[in-house]
Image 1 (tube, rainbow, N blue to C red):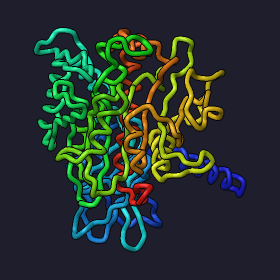
Image 2 (spheres, rainbow, N blue to C red):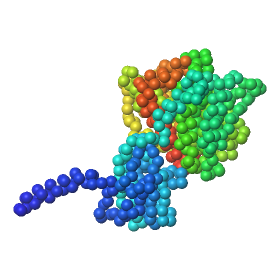
Image 3 (tube, rainbow, N blue to C red):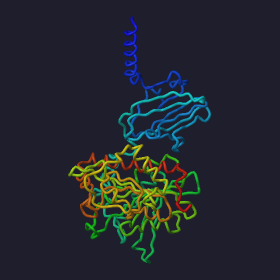
Length: 472
């Protein structure tokens, strides 16, 4: 074979190698740098790594065996937990001769890579595509619970917890509050019905909140998530009030119920409250009563309030589309936003990372024209931005209560005012929500996205020491 033929053959073999290398199997090893036999040290869900079935949005148990080894993964695709605590660096060392790691993918994870490092810096790599799963937070479960709460006639299959108006004697509100309390208690949370009367008429409580507590590993700080469970009363502006209040805010109430299930086996740094507020529609009275009174269920006054995440009006948002073909807006606003020109709080970095890197949202998606309502500080720059994720001073919901106390806050919100014609009206029903977004599947998809966004923000903020009260 002459020199030219040899050169052609070498080029052909090199090209063939480049083509078949990605197809060579789920365990890829660099012959010059690998030193660990993955089949000998790694199991996933009790099986050899090459036999594991990885599913999106689900938990998987990973066992790494071997002194001085370390397991790492790209933090934007895989979350690693040890003893129920997120490893914020996504790099877990073996303590002793083995370590058990709980691995969580998101519903949007398509491919994972796990790297096992030896003490001398050499590594072995496991990679695998991720199949469809049943995410621990999913839109179908949300819809099922929504349907149970907003149906008309109580039965074994229908709770019928509608008419949750606050500010006057209302047996239906009390009945619903007891149901929500039972949900949290059934999961093992320390749960309170917090009743505050401040106008000398016990028959008309100023607020009746449901507060579920999860104790943290530190006794010095507190943090939380919440949504308001009351709905716009009859005759209320701008649409005349509602009975179901499906979008505002039964949707957010159900999200909090699902968060309680997702968090029950996880450990948290700070004492954590999951709040269902009353009287939001009457001026944030419920959350203010919790935050500014002294009672067994109230916000502790002797602990640092680090952050709070608020869920109000969920699901009519990207990736759902309007009839005219425009996507609905999606809002995730962090704060406080003292200076519109600079980033003021560290929690903004969490919000940006979750949407941009983990959920891989289309951060530059825009429409022609503007949306129907604006935010306080940045409307000129964001009026046509679909994925509206930034610091802002926007108020009008319970996050303001905690922001006023120095907490770093996140406010998740879908379409509102002009973007949702059923706002505060009798037409605010689950059936109407389905119709507005073009079908139940679209609604479930939108809910699933925002549920994962706030869940990821919470577990990351919990393990980020820089997220402190701005007055600390």
